[in-house]
Length: 334
Image: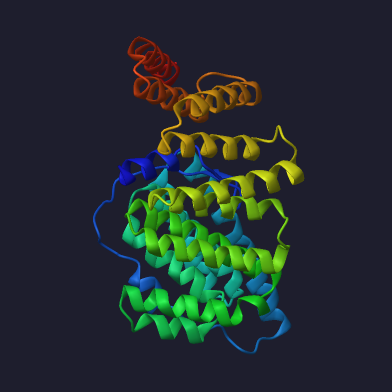
């Protein structure tokens, strides 16, 4: 069940770009789909006085504070309040000539909030707006007159042509947006588009960071999820092991993101029906999560327990599976 596999793999998979954890969600209504965010963008003033620049910097500071507040609200699951803060931040930024890279970052967090709320179509539009802003007005105008697939094609074309010339900060934000856009597509079972977004993110990250940076391991993890969703097991295993090797060498074998790569490797062995190996890996992951998180009730710990219950059930060890599932439920309720 590829859809079930994707949903299972989303939970507990890290997002090193912004320090978050991927969450699931159901899609809600389509009012305010996000297209307005693309169509109503205004141009930044080309000339300004020192006084104007000082005033704009004050507005930029207010907007950054609102974005930081929105991030905290999102982590507390106060999504509507976070959305309100982000809309206000973008309004400040667009009205007062703030750098487009700062506006792009606000759209990025706005899109992530919509993704967490399950408003996937709006999240897609906002991620595309973020991507467009990082390439300037020309791309923004180009994608606003195309259908959804045409928008994506425009993004790939401009990214391939201009990504290497972007500043490191803009290129990394662009890669982050592509990674999160791919997560949206995986939730929508649009696996081919997710795969293309992840490949594009990998190219950008490698260009700016080199092939051995720990963030490259994050992209390889996401590529592996797409390969697993398409049941391309050999490619999935190669991507997982590459990400694991990079992270282990750059972060140390006990780092949380290394443990997440081991978790993904355990999920690969489940899909490959190698349950004994999967069980052994998941037991190691559970031990490491509980040692690092100092408790049984964390999301990662609960997720591994539930996954172990599935593995035991697949092996015909049903009483043990029920015990492990009850254990996961008790941890969740604690």
